[in-house]
Amino acid sequence: MTCKEFNNQLALLQQPGEVPREMEVHMSNCVSCMEAFEKTKLLFDFVAEEKAKKISPFVTTRIMAQIESAEKPGKVMVRPVLASVFSLVVLLMGFFSASLFTSSEPSSLADTSEVIATDYFFSDNPGSQLEDIWLNTYSYE
Image (cartoon, rainbow, N blue to C red; front, side):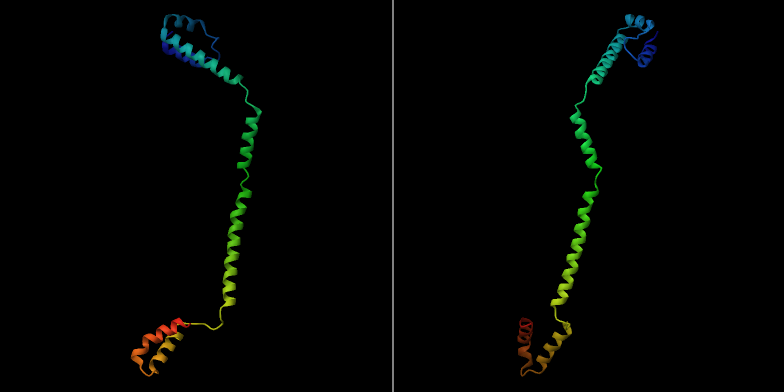
């Protein structure tokens, strides 16, 4: 048996105690294959120990609780929707209350320009009072 055949047979082993006679003969002559078999044997022992360990039921309960809480995003989505609806309602109430408290007569730039021009042309001294008219018109509104 060659080392390559030995490694192929070693990979197919189900239990380290079930070693065919050919493999035992090859291991007695080849040091590297003997080390590979020992490492495989340690691997099987480690896997057997890990299978023997029992997990605490509390760990399983905590993991399942976290999975269930992650699966329930429905309640979390309600808050952003309600916040946007309430902000829209407040915005609309602001617009309606502003329209209630403002005067019904529209004020425009043309009205103020007309007042300034009228005061300017019908004053006694139009050149010197222009700045006073602008200051007084805007400060008394």
